[in-house]
Length: 86
Image (cartoon, rainbow, N blue to C red; front, top):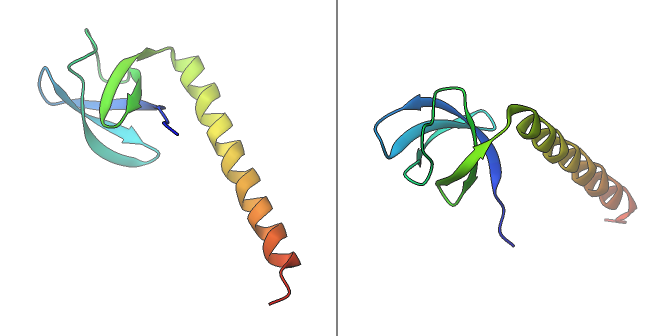
């Protein structure tokens, strides 16, 4: 399964690279495929490449869904651990 996630551009390094905030972690990404990026823009990131700009509201909704999925997974893991007669 492939996953592309919204990330926020924190700093532009050059025409092809930027530092992005990925869930609180800052990482260098390739921005060569996206024109006209500014600090604060959101992009869809897939395997280290920014694919396109994303509206900030859409980015917030998508990140909220990922957070909900994480909480759901944690609850399911806890339920399975409680059922396991170890």
